[in-house]
Amino acid sequence: MNSPAASVLFVCVHNAGRSQMAAAFLARLGGDRVAVRSAGSAPADSVNPAVTAAMAEAGIDLSAETPKILTPEAVRASDVVITMGCGDACPVFPSKRYLDWRLDDPAGQGVAAVRPIRDEIERRVRGLLAELGVEAAA
Image (cartoon, rainbow, N blue to C red; front, side, top):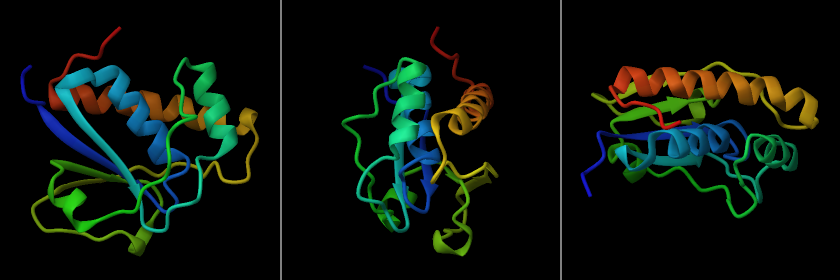
């Protein structure tokens, strides 16, 4: 197996919605060509049920995922760090490539409100793959 072309860390406060969706899309579309991590500065106990339901509609099962704590090691091990609404709660390390994706927070929302967030995340993940020079899987 070839080593991944890049490693990406998605970060949001609770690691229960946006970062979980982004990591799942990148893992599916990037395959073994991209190493994927997600974490939160204050992780929730579980993934948002509306997020799990919306991702199931897209054919991605998040039911076994659990929110993870953000560590400095995860940031250092990643080529690209993408924050999603965590503001000053996420550490910044010099020389990392940082992107901040401003997206609506799915917390407290129903599946209908999560769908457009999910679709926007998928669009951005596809764009990220193109920037990284990785062809998205079908």
